[in-house]
Length: 365
Image (cartoon, rainbow, N blue to C red; front, side, top):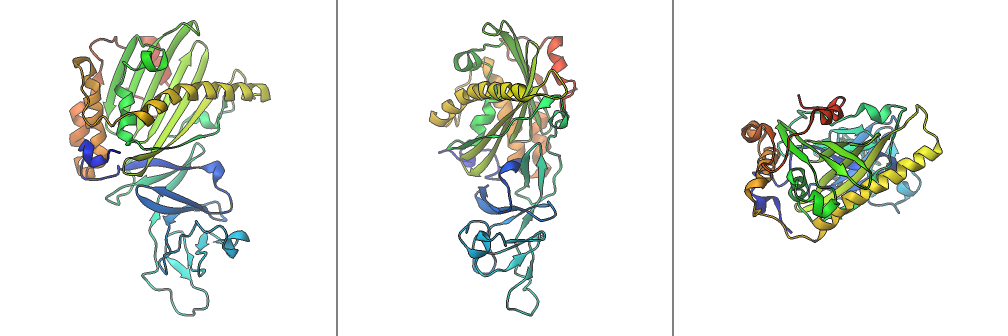
């Protein structure tokens, strides 16, 4: 299993950015025990609806706030009080800012040391996302939020939970530069291909004729930071948006989610259309599963034996390093690759492909 230091990514084992940590649909009355970035967390929704993410272990004796489902207060749904959470061991209560605000059978002030770290979390497009920064800085970019998620003429999918891979996210990100795998892996060789880098955004434009559909497949794909991929896709008259979100669990271990939106021909899709959208999502997922199977069984590509036509791999890895180094160094990485890059054996995207970008969040100019 390769780690960040093996790829020589930078000073940090884990990158800076917004990352999905849970499907909003799985968060009910009980807190969720999570592990990401080599740490344990407790996620819960307060009675006001507020999302709270804290370090998992009580400052008293180290009990996990969210991993004791058999404890009496957990069984009876008594852990969440207002927007605070009680430890299932001795009942110490923590406010959303992580400070202990009540200790049972104790009349004095809560010790100042009775404090857990609290994290910035947001609910976006049915996903719960956290801001992770090794330097503890505030977010310098917003997570992507597509207007289609709330539009009646688009059908929202449910998140596919794909589990964990013993693969560093670098290997997943390499896909953005990989025009040559589209034929052997997916059966869809591309006629045009282009990457573009702009600060924390990484774009891919590609397309080609698909015999099975008797139509052109065109995709416009972009990363917002190191872990949130969105892809606008067009096949004939069909329009969809694919989500691939991945988050480091430990150094070299990655959790992955998948989703898909489908444009409806009408404003109020019926059950038949929703079922068709689910079938379409399964088809899109099956294509992604082809990548997943490769990643799950490959050796780490610490150094790619790259050809002159594969220069974009190196460019993507330079871009990626901005998230593994102090924020004041980020610009020095992305400026090295800023702009558009077409592999020497591919064409530039045609003008019609630009139609996919019209409403894209953070679309390239």
